Length: 426
Image (cartoon, rainbow, N blue to C red; front, side, top):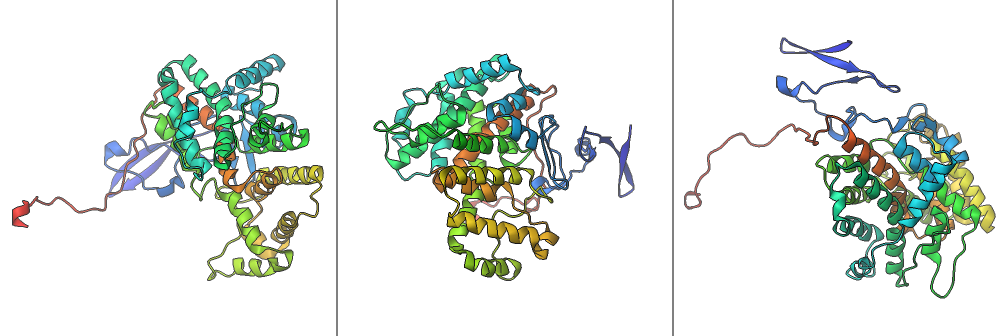
């Protein structure tokens, strides 16, 4: 067995070296605590918090694999529900398995009727993510049997319920915000088309989504379905490590995703483009971004993990063209600004040197805007898509042999022991 040697004040500690099927080797530090030492790694920049066989990212090479399949191939030949099946089961379904899976998802899409009253407890101007966190967590009260996470059958039922119901939760959050009646799901529509139907239809007027637009939204779902051990996925795993109810775990992940440093990037891109206002002003904003003293940065460029082109960005760029072509929006001023910014990022030496390539958020916000989806819903749609990966990661963790509750350690920097003084003597 290959080991790494750590020497501290003359103490020699041998640590096993673990090899994955892809990616860097990992030093197993689990025995350090029993020898009086912990590692210190805020933000988990160099720490593998788990082992997983679901998703692989190589940021330097710009690679993203779901169960070994490149994201480009899945985006070209698959759909979101097939990708969800793959994330859950590890293999692509055959035709019969795919039909059964899709049918089960569609049959679980309605919410319990009593959940209608939960929505009415919120202010009309409540952010959709605030509503989603609450409604998803509240599902635990409607399905108490889901708390038996040791039962594989109950886990499976909860997984289907979450994947099927979260689009309804998201769409109804939007409808409540607008003051419009809730629209029930239709089992005859595909996953993305059904979501657009619930979002845009009213009791007075139906909404039949264009296949091109539904496919573009489905592609957004697929590209965001999972992304390894990011903040929200780690949150789901952390919450689930205590065997918490699965609906509570997904609510926790949704809350984490809501943070502007995580799930709000595509919304920030549109805010930035609105601030720029016109193609003629792009040069000024690019110069501000290059000035370290300005405190300004262009949103939608670069990535915490990808130090090369985000593999999802090129796919989303193509979806951008397809949607704008379908809707006749070639002269859309926002898209024109986006294309000019993209050109600068791909040709300007400053951006090339710093590897600030356009990422998936740069394009997805433009597509969502073209689909008639308001910016307040962008993060909600991200959560909808990521639910597929959260569920897969949660199930993998709970089902793992030797499962342990998460318990990070700390570097304590507070006061040392001191003696209590009674109030009368202070």
